[in-house]
Length: 511
Ligand SMILES: Cc1ncc(COP(=O)(O)O)c(C=O)c1O
Image (cartoon, rainbow, N blue to C red; front, side):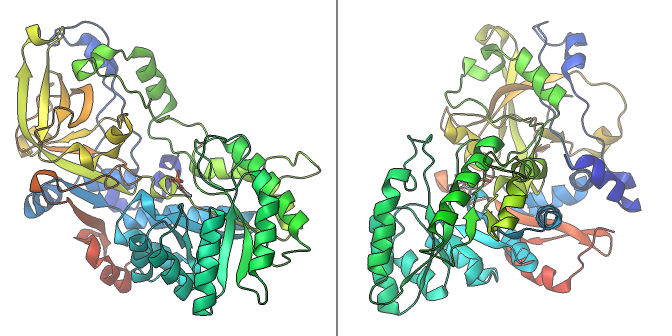
């Protein structure tokens, strides 16, 4: 998605960019070191050239890895900044009133919040901790949204004190929030979260049937003086269907215009998150799906949660453009023109999409255990890395993060070698005592046998993968987060916690 455009924007120094590992499917067919002759297909991820540049800095990565110990999450806040700016530019190209709220839940790092503050982007939070992190990152309180069900009293009170925007999910929550608002003599700025009629299984939001009672309650609670300032309507749909999002946006617009006499200042429609990402090319994803079988996974593992669609024809910005250009089913024009005609503001809460290519996760190989062919039909090994699958969240949704991790050598000679090495097939386990602690159940084909001390890098992990489910299991410290950027054209780094000082320096450019 980004590669073609960003390549042209790369400065001269990027000439040293490391070349990605070539797709391996064909090579595996030719390889006779594997016990099986069945074709095994890897899933090479799409990697942004800016990320490739940093992956090529092996000595820097090695020293960060050994200096901080354990797995390390590398963050690229400048890539995040450029992606976010692309979204702002797109919304402006449609001449829309708009406000983006970055869904904080997708990554805990401070640097992304600070970039949002710099860009005037809001933050979507769902806990007091996330709200405090947004305030700490310098985001204006009125640009902080609070979503999530049955918000606790502390969260409601702090949000009201700060003037944040609450997405109200239930009647009792509205009553509680209104009562605090009265006590604090603060307006309750809110959106009403809708539950689409076709999402009956969802536990969030108000169904259409519940709305008349809700409007009545708001009128009551606004007596004798106005406490609740209902700024508009919101929804967040599960899945990634752009047509469903556009259809729901049309519904919300028509509802809001009907409500106009009652709530004249309600002019905001929040379409939530769920803009899809593409992690791999169409052909890579297609080949992978066509070839895989349970035998390709350690222990014949199968996943009840299915897999994320790792390729998407219209990811991110294109998905948003499609939503905005969806024809109005009840008249002329499209969604964008209807929003303009109604003088309504479009709000959105992307998480994953804003984090595209903004982080990778580095592990070290800690052991390589051969499995004798008798233990399995086809020989393979288990690589154990120096962290756990808690740092790669997909496993916790009964699924797997499928894009191939990259083996980065720790040995200079190996980097320079042009001799073909025998291919090597291995699943990847975590260092814990849990049998289920597997980062990749899939038996991945590597270009050579990994060695203890080699770096193993999972790519594009910033969106939900790296830290949603991390824990200090076994007393292991949480992995460090390190920001990588350029200072005067030279690769530089700082801890995520220190990124605000770097921002203040404002060495802001990639060229
Ligand atoms: C209310 C709400 N908004 C936004 C998001 C972000 O979704 P995504 O990261 O898919 O854009 C979520 C994700 O669960 C959510 O629940």
